[in-house]
Image 1: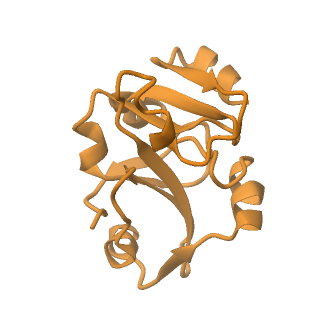
Image 2: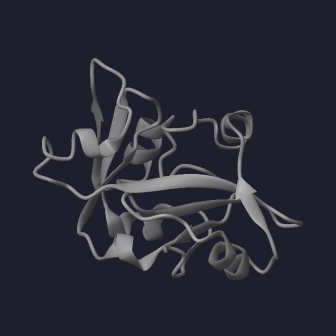
Length: 148
């Protein structure tokens, strides 16, 4: 699914597959010339449905800022079941692209890096992608400060 999206949209990025499960992108950041990490996390937001939030790997998402960015009062982390149902990907493997119908809020800190490592579609893969590609091929992407 993700690989097809990358090819169809000529995305500047590549999927890196590992033999063992990748618990956290930072475990392998050194392998890829210390590429910074970005994480894609799904939230359920009061009367707004779901939203994908993307921040630098070492940062946390400020849920109040996220809720404000999409015009609601409260957002909560989506459950693992919701993540799979809504995105088609398991929690921990959600990429920042190839997810339709879900607005995306991208923290500007991610764009400060030329390349980032993100979820690659499953627990054995990572996606190395030019950060600007997230705004080019992502669905309904807005850049807003949501990190804390």
